[in-house]
Each structure stands twice: as structure tokens, then as C-alpha cells.
Image (cartoon, rainbow, N blue to C red; front, side, top):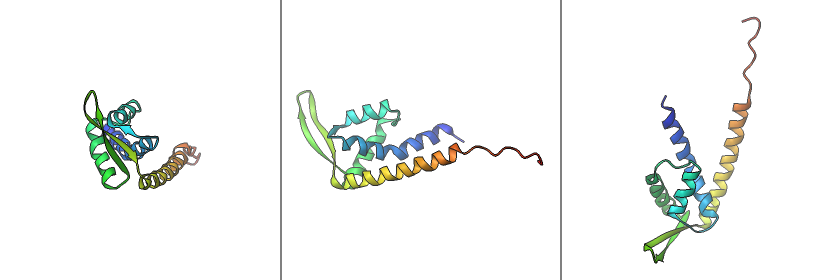
Length: 117
């Protein structure tokens, strides 16, 4: 088993939820998303984020606007849509259920070996 690959896949599976949650707090620039995800150890490579943002935009869960910058090219700022809020609420419920299920499984003690074994 490739443990590192499993860990990366677990993070990727939660990345959409995390990105929507960050964007739901207010308009955000891509580098700010990358910084927060990197600090939380939720993103391994930046190239993972851009396709995800495009999928979220195509699904009408986020929108963006261009803002002129004095320090270079225009910047793309993302915000969550009403559909995005609905999706985020659903993902939050799913996450809560998963945490409860995993906690139930991982807190269970191994049965004591019986004396008849």
C-alpha cells in the first residue's frame, strides 16, 4: 500500500469542501486560497487548485471578477454563489456524518481475547 498516495487522495477528497468554505467567508484571491490551504497542509501542489476552481465555476458554485492591479496583471477574485452556499451546506452535513462514522469506528476497542482461544 502506498500510504503517501492514500493521504494525498484523502486531502483531495476534502479539498472542494475546504475551498468552498474559505470562499464563503468572503471574496478571495487565488494566492490567498493557496496560502491558507498550504498552511493547513490541505494542498500538495498548486496545480490541483486551478482545475478545481474551474469545475466549481462551471457548476455555478463560485463566480469571479477581475480587479485591476497596480502591481501587475489584473487579479481574479472568487466569491460563492447561492448554489455554492447550498452545496457547502450539503458538504458540511456529509462531513459531519463522516466524522461521526469514523469516530464510531476508530473509538471502538478491540475485543479482549477469550480464554477459550
